[in-house]
Length: 216
Image (cartoon, rainbow, N blue to C red; front, top):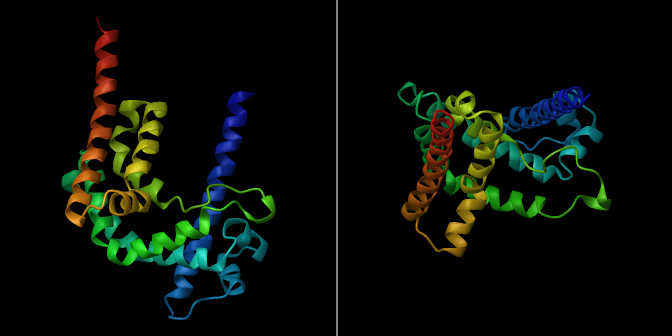
């Protein structure tokens, strides 16, 4: 029964991710015309209701920022992660992800600051959330970067690594390093890549140590 519940829960979460992606993709396509689309236009293009959009994006600005950030970052990130030279180098792939995001941060970080302001407060009227308040784009990129480790680490350790990397890759990490630490862009990149490499290498070392202990 527990396994069946887990499968159903995973299926619902996958459907939520697909719905959210369809909404954002529709907003990206419509925004490419140069005029911010309306909720009705996005709903029609995504084949969902207005109510569904508001379940995922309480404010139109939040949706349009998400779409703009995706249109800006997705092509260069996908190109970086598809580099065949890094196919078997998860730490290198994570570093490539960080370097690409930071290269576009002059345009994307202002969007990130606005997005954070829009999503830090609870949903209005205590409405239940259909899932995470923010886009899962970062998780998808980290998943793609670390994919060579999924089978090696096992699912629990792998997911812990993705969660840990979420804290050191992205807008929140940039804001902390700039606003709290006062780092310049070069020092910011060095700190983020060092932290990300340390997490990946520690996950691999822990796995190898556990294997060595079991073989004694």
